[in-house]
Image (cartoon, rainbow over all chains, first blue to last red; front, side):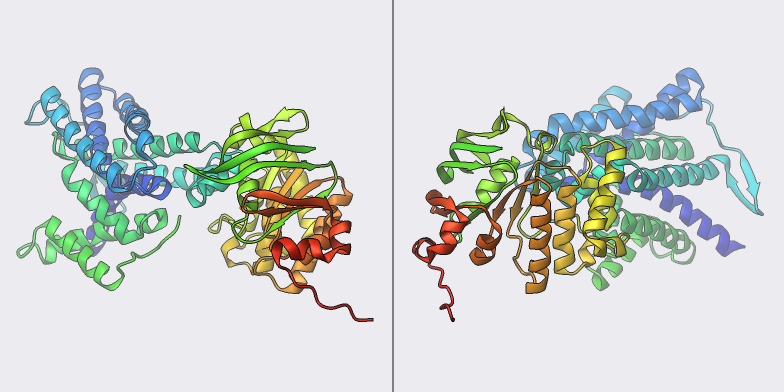
Length: 286
Length: 240
């Protein structure tokens, strides 16, 4: 039972990584931009969640605002920050993205203070037994939301016209445009979906930790970058597998190696070991 | 059908094609031939909207095409089969064909899919396969099929025979003739001049981005010196 609970905890952590990293890999797959500022949007999701919940008491409303608000802001960031520099060498948007991330963190510090904000009446904190395993409501909800969102993304990508346009544009934007697909619309869609996932993840982590702070995006940002490399740059499937694996390895590692290495160190030792064997990542392509 | 008037086009500050005049009449196959770097593919890519027009005009019917955004040109009846096929290699055969019909209503897509699969039954056998795993000939069929899904009035074909086995080339040209018999207008770029001349009604020879010779394919076939002069093509001596 211990192993099963550790495995479930790992999947829980992995599903949060997946929500953040899938958005990042969507952007990389389409535009070949390492969108570091994605982690700033994750933090913003946390702030939207806590601020809306503390003022309205509605978890549903705070979820909607975190998801859609961050999604829309992601599109605005693309429009104002990246669109004009898409034809520049890759390091130009990368530097812009790093600068944007730093600016976002500082902005959160100015607007919301350095010490973070907590939920005044933290939601989803009760322990809930299910199948003999005890997790907090928030943790069960995290697993459920991740399954719904990632499943929804898979459905959108494989079963809809928009998904077809997106997949074609990722493979060859010029040819996709030849057949009437609007690449700008696809890019907006891509940024919206990726950012909305990050915003949702930020809100979930804010609830689970009962704390939202300006720097909460830092660790997820470099872990997500490592995950998308591990999964194979641009591969959504690879990113999902890598994120879940990393979560499980962290979960078991903190029990068996916790006296030697902390959680983040375990994650990065694992990433380095895998990349030594498969430097190209586990998967490649869409 | 297609009327190009004094077209100059190229990449950045480089002009590849200079003041090209070209008329392609409705329902004909017009071959654009020439040596490497003559500007054949650049002309096709310019018509499709991927290369910058520097001066001149491209008319399709009575509409000026060079003012139309790339993504809208397929709706004006222009479809491209590019050099190297450029299929969406991670997508299945069906998905590639559906992308071809992206600009059309759903009911047209189903009808066109059926038509393409009738024309190229091998694609039907591989409908769920990733297109990157098809053979070269099948990929070329798929590239043509993808373009046909868009119900084009003008089909732009770039290097149809490149890298294909002779049998496959023959099959592709048979398909072209079938399309022509259905009234489609085809602008064909080919390195394989013999093959192009055998299928085309009219020929334009390009040399360093300018028109070196224009006329009927019949005349070019009869007078081998024309093609030899511009491309250096040697024909096999005739045997009785």
